[in-house]
Length: 120
Image (cartoon, rainbow, N blue to C red; front, side, top):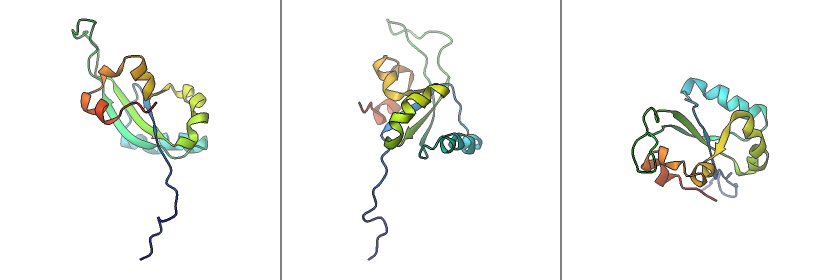
């Protein structure tokens, strides 16, 4: 039986990126994807929007007036990582690993953190 996928290399999307405070909505999809197309990047793989949890102090107490921010997550193609690493600063995009290595991951739900572990 013919399988058109045989012999076709799949593109890898290993780098998770976060746009903090960007409440992506479906109506923004074309605009968001057009930015990548305009700068000749591969189409990103959208994860979605996560609402942040309240921050906690060193004793584990919730800090008032924190949390509730909408952060938008997406993967970029591995072939784009080098060029994207500089370009992302134009849009304040962060690597997901930056959040972990700066001990900021607690603001995201545990289920999300377990599903998306740092990759480097």
